[in-house]
Image 1 (cartoon, one colour):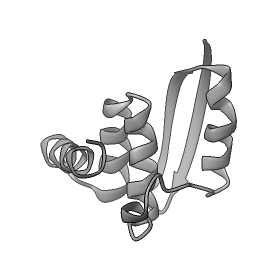
Image 2 (cartoon, one colour; image 1 turned 30 degrees about the vertical axis):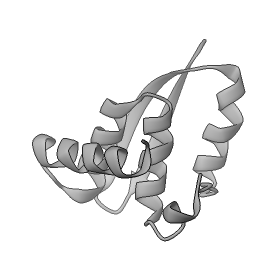
Image 3 (cartoon, one colour; image 1 turned 45 degrees about the horizontal axis):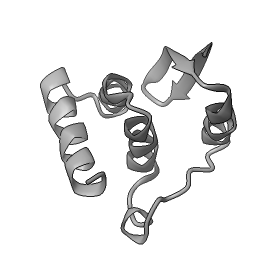
Image 4 (cartoon, one colour; image 1 turned 60 degrees about the vertical axis):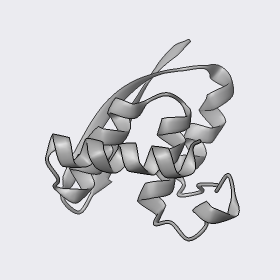
Length: 94
């Protein structure tokens, strides 16, 4: 397991996060930085890019990081962002 730090630059500012990551997941993480986010099924294809990125984090068990990213880019409070991420998870990750 390796520690990876990510800096995300957005219109509302920057966010920096640290992740513990397996080497096999590094390529997928790098493609996220290049805005290449794959959809796991057809239902996800119509989702905004941010939601697809949130689903990638959720699939890796990184729910808290998904909430942090949603809060950063939406300006939502913690509870509202957590509810949003929980609903996304319930709908697409059964």
